[in-house]
Amino acid sequence: TGTSRPQRMLKAVQKNATKGDPQSVISAIDYYCRHKEWAMNVGDDKGLILDSVLMEVNPSTVLELGTYCGYSTVRIARLMSPGSKLITVEFNPAFAEVARQIIAYAGLQDKVTLVEGSSGDLIPKMKERFGIKYFDFVFLDHWKDSYAPDTKLLEDCGLLKKGTVLLADNVICPGAPEYLKYVRNSPRYESRYYKSNLEYTKAEDGLEKSVFLG
Ligand SMILES: O=C(NC/C=C/[C@H]1O[C@@H](n2ccc(=O)cc2)[C@H](O)[C@@H]1O)c1cc([N+](=O)[O-])cc(O)c1O
Ligand SMILES: [Mg+2]
Image (tube, rainbow, N blue to C red; front, top):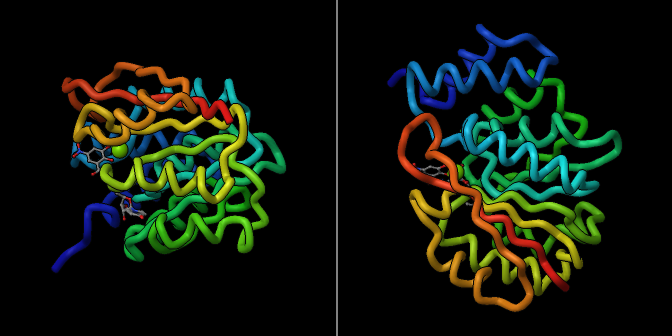
């Protein structure tokens, strides 16, 4: 067996990006995935929306569910202020290993804590393990049927505060119908859909931004 897709993505970063330059890491991944081999990164189209929502919130604490290879981890961490913390949860050890190297190549390892395990197991441990009171920003990009249960779990664990912003990838493709129903019908959220494209394609996809009202 040869290399995996994440390993080939890492090679493309090491070959084409500049160490310590997050934007060059993002561009190298986008170029590779658009022209060589598709991969499920949030990508450059939706990435611009992620950037602008993130900058608007300017969070001190961020939770990312679904690191994969670290593309959105780098996109988010590169825009975060000094002293702010990003915790990213990854279930697959092989993906986590590649992500650690891509995050380090971008020079963002000091802002990022990558935790291996499932969101359901780790969310209840956020306070005790990482001293997190609340998350200011949550990026959901893991298993689509986990978005809704994990949002309820974040509420139950007291990890959301008035004004916390949840941003969910793929609410159209592959889709997260249960999640959309939940946040759009709950009086505890103010939701808005940002229409865009599925990464590196012309298909529609979009991000749902939901503000927790407390
Ligand atoms: O399926 C998709 N994403 C699932 C992502 C899952 C990631 O989240 C991790 N995780 C981390 C913690 C957990 O608790 C569970 C999983 C998994 O180990 C994986 O790294 C997807 C699919 C398409 N697509 O076009 O088909 C496009 C996208 O943008 C997508 O995000
Ligand atoms: Mg996604």
